Length: 456
Figure 1 (cartoon, rainbow, N blue to C red):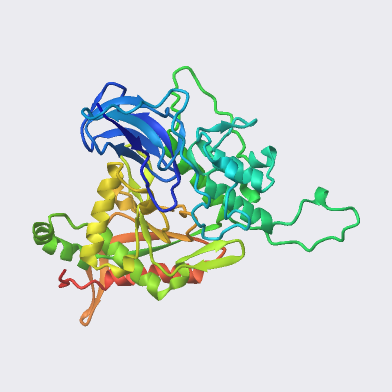
Figure 2 (cartoon, rainbow, N blue to C red; figure 1 turned 60 degrees about the horizontal axis):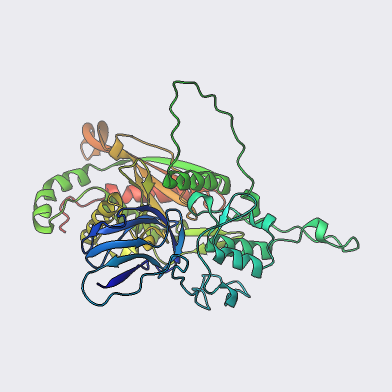
């Protein structure tokens, strides 16, 4: 018989490791080709690893909650037939060699271009610190290279599973650490006082590393205690961080979308017959947002300390509710370059794969603006929280029939119109009320000017 080694596949350009969350097959189970074997989690998405071969699972090389590098052996499958291959020994699980140079970062840190050779052939299971936090050997090695003590490492804000510090977390911390002034106690007594430095408002800055105050919650015997799952913990952490980082302001506007409703009613049957999928209002909203961003590109920015990063690409995320009750934001890259058919296909594809846990890590990255459709739950308006590191998020409410005053050449009349509220939260550090108000008005203008005879 022949043994096949199942490797942890590459899941995105910047994803180097994943956490094993659940084995779907146990030793001795039969596996069909393309059948999922194990569930894994990165810092962004959960996904399944399918088997490229049929056979029987011989061994689970790694355990649940282990952190594994891309390319590592995670399981051994007996494919039957051929000469028997030597089964991995219990005491010598295959260990991946770390490449001498890590993937280049957007802002490389001097001295981190090559990690020390001591990283090679180490186990990539988590290492427990004195503060009961877990660190991968890659993070520990970077910390040692940069002279970061265990106490300092324990203060770094982690965005990984269970608050784990990822490679990006520690690199971001080092970047801000190098910019920050030296602590007072480390300066010589005779050293002149240094001028104050503007604090960095980056999510990883020390300003926001303080632990949240613990609130005592009374629990009675009839109460049910539910532990947050991994994704809910990440969402909670991300939302709290966003409110700490950005001063939120929200503007509202009501738009008349009667032409869009009538247009969709007219073409939806023929569109579904031609394209094999339904057209919703979401692609129309995304197209209007993309046009407004091209008119007002200073909405399409991020903040890094005192620097404003103006993004060239218009990548619009769409908040998607999952069956588990959690939320994920897949991103439509270069949304301004897609027509309505292309946007419809992208929206439907990402929404389906998000709900089926089939998204790739790169598909929830690099968003520059977010749209959330709260109207799908019957809500008329809401105050969304900014999806960091973006500076604005637009919520669209339910479309309702309302009496409205219409101006005609013969005078004002009252008619039944389809109306919808839009609400946009934005980061007041860089987006003032004028820009925020004009932007949401521009989106409403594009929606109200929709051509009812538009062909797609």
